[in-house]
Image: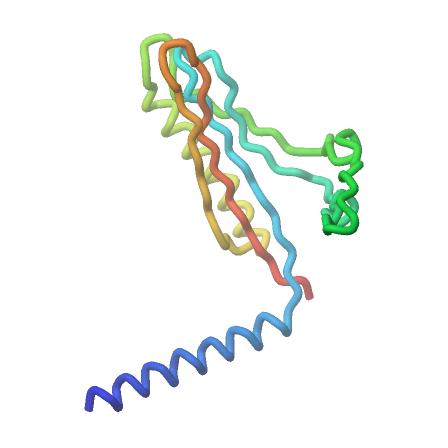
Length: 157
């Protein structure tokens, strides 16, 4: 009985993987990244924003391949990579002069939720969320950010 259960589970896993692989090849997707940067600088001196690029870039235009025979340096110009057409939503900093500000966190959550809800209404699917922190490294380091990337995908018909 155990062998039959294991074989059935493996067969179902294989078939579902195959179906997903076929589905993925039948569609093309576009990806959209929304980034929140929230300051964790003491005294509220930092800047916090929700950023969304409105223009596109093709990574291939700014990429090079290194080989043993050709290790020529990538000569892309930073000014050509830079996106100047983007949406910037002001967020509140985690800290103010009195310390951590929970009201600010709740306000940021409401703004981010509003943006994510709009993206879903536009037919985007939230595929991944990833976050990181660069925090205060001690007495002489007053820098810090909490960054979250929301990665959406949408089928191109």
